[in-house]
Length: 121
Image 1 (cartoon, rainbow, N blue to C red):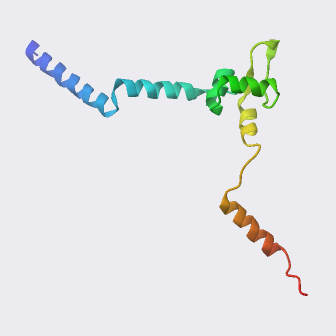
Image 2 (cartoon, rainbow, N blue to C red):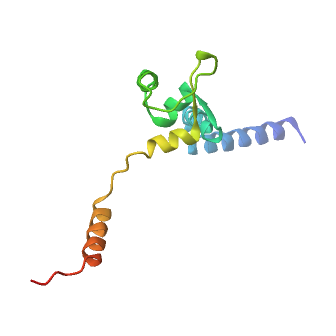
């Protein structure tokens, strides 16, 4: 293969690569996606650091510190310094106070009415 042909092949492959990269949103978009994926890898862990728990819950670190200080959220402090969170405990904590949808309230009302016998006067 001649050098000219090699250069043409290289240029064609480079254009193809650039087109594929652009289709994915460019280098910045790919970097953001990689960072987002890396940040979400905490869901595969059982024990989370304060920063990972903050990302998982969508809370600021200072808000999370306040919740731990008031013992409003389950956490662990081995050695008394660093704060850790159990992933399952956080899921349970998030699900503590569910809010029913309008549809769920309607279904509850129907169940209540159909379960009660009609009183005759």
